[in-house]
Image 1 (cartoon, each protein chain N blue to C red):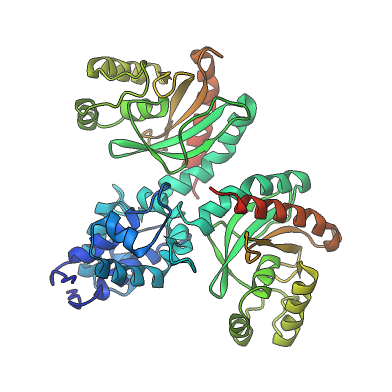
Image 2 (tube, each protein chain N blue to C red):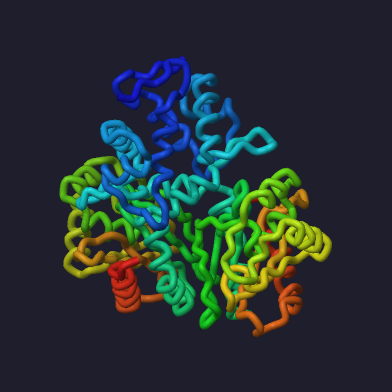
Amino acid sequence: MTVSRAAGTGPVLARALRILGAFSADHPAMTLSELARRTRLPVSTVHRLLAGLVEWGALERGDDGYYRVGLRLWEVGALAPRGQGLRERALPFLEDLSQITRENVQLAVREGSELVFVERIAGTGAVPVLTRVGSRFALTLTGVGLVLLAHAPVELQEEVLAAPIDRFTPCTVTDPATLRHMLADIRRSGFAVSDRQVTMDALSVAVPVHDARGAVVAAVSLVVRHGSVQAHSLVPLLRTSARAISRALAQPS
Amino acid sequence: MTVSRAAGTGPVLARALRILGAFSADHPAMTLSELARRTRLPVSTVHRLLAGLVEWGALERGDDGYYRVGLRLWEVGALAPRGQGLRERALPFLEDLSQITRENVQLAVREGSELVFVERIAGTGAVPVLTRVGSRFALTLTGVGLVLLAHAPVELQEEVLAAPIDRFTPCTVTDPATLRHMLADIRRSGFAVSDRQVTMDALSVAVPVHDARGAVVAAVSLVVRHGSVQAHSLVPLLRTSARAISRALAQPS
């Protein structure tokens, strides 16, 4: 039985948020018992919290007994300036970039020591990529990740470089000293290249997006087939788009 | 001071959700005292709940002291099948419809006795419309609303028709008997027309989107300038798009 600490929000809020956090692209619909298992909470507790979450509309319960994320949570989530707000302002420019290049276009922001893809437009016939809108990724692997890491606080850079780095391909850079050099290069040149670090057929080129105060708030990239174009040749196009997005962000909403 | 009922989620979860629900398109960023005022909760309670919500990432606190919806909530909200899921599957067909007609294209679902716009593509040079993605609207006013109401449970129809209906223009239909006839017509003909009910220069034509079991799960519409085209002429185009969306919804994800 849940006994809340009298003085605070106690475990109730944390547990309710743990239930929301159990939903993912791989688990978009779950039964009561699945949710209890994934949150490691007693079934009775989950049952009670689900009632409150469903009543408000954060979750919806289908005729099939499965719980899914509710429309009301989507409505509130759509108000996130760094998610939907950024996405909507950037979308016209990302679509231009996609139509001009016919390659994959990606927009990402940093969330702690990871990145989150806020938009991704797949090019017709472009090289396949692993990413999905709303999915997370390590910062050291991709062009957008390297740009975001290069402009992150030094403490966070050191934390990321000190942690073990997953090797995706023989080209994945895992050596902290090499990565440190790459980050310095990115800050100097203003763009990042990830060469076959995620898959052996893809290369990404990324540049930063700034807010009105000059802070790096996002990164935009093109993901192309390795060997199809010179990475450098994509930089002016990306810079033009990133500047257009920065200008759109500076406009009052 | 918040004292939770020992046996349940008590007021903690309800109050935390009330804080999330205080955010809207008109109020996307609020201070602690604004949130306390809008939720009618004590500042100390809001302060404590905000700490939990910020820690998890449901909200973010800016350097300016304002709270905004967080990226984490956007990530979870993006998993809502009736929100982002529907939007992503429908988007290619809505874009086709937009490019072919150059008019406003809208996609909406019913949420209780209102509708929520899930997507809206503004046509280049098309008639201005009042709607926004994630915004709510009455069911009796628009083409999409009339389609959704026509296929809603009878009890909900009666509830909506019994409530007072806001008059937007001299053409807004507010008489329950007339609306009841319109709903029967829509079920028979398979499309709805809202003629200058929202603004005096616009007319919308809408058709239902069905799921794999044949239930009406959404409505798609074109909003055009009044007098520019015959409403009937848009129906085959809308039906083709709605069927394509229905087919996409029936595909396993």
